[in-house]
Length: 276
Image (cartoon, rainbow, N blue to C red; front, side, top):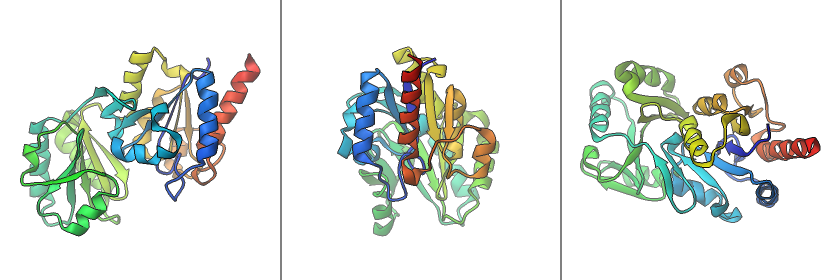
């Protein structure tokens, strides 16, 4: 069955290590996809404001977005779907962090639809670091009193921290009430229950009438697994860790430093054209 929708992760997947990709080649690819009524979806843990900055050189209006690890689905103008974390759940996680990790230096970021929020205790250096990933950052007195739809709670430890152990502890503590996943770089993402990148693809399936076996997806990390398992044509990046290749056998034709996502989609289009 012909591929009608392609979803791609960003870091380690579409983006090279300099946070860029071949803009001219990507624009030409979008032209080919538009001519065949194929949709390209960016599926990432990043906030929507940050994502659009990456795509400013190629016109962000041409894409669909699954942001915040599946908690929000949007086009360039409108929110199509969202699954926020409740205030009661935020309170529980903040209490868990204070009681079990108070002696450790970690940072809680609430990623909302309007902005990202951190404690008033955060230093200017921390705020500057957070702005690299969240263009709009607000400091507040109490995290549990934010007036916004909170899509993701990010708990961030130093990069050498054992994030897998924290993910395990959070899953044991909150069970099916919340979805917890490691996002790399010492970060743990906490979302509403049963929320991941595949949730966003399911929403797009309902909206556009595109079935999973008509979708392809690209990823490199554990928070991509649900998405890769959902689609009919999953691809792991060659630069992904071994456990990803063990779970998903198909591999993109090149790594993220050599525009592997673009090259593989070009190959898919060529193969589909040959069948016609």
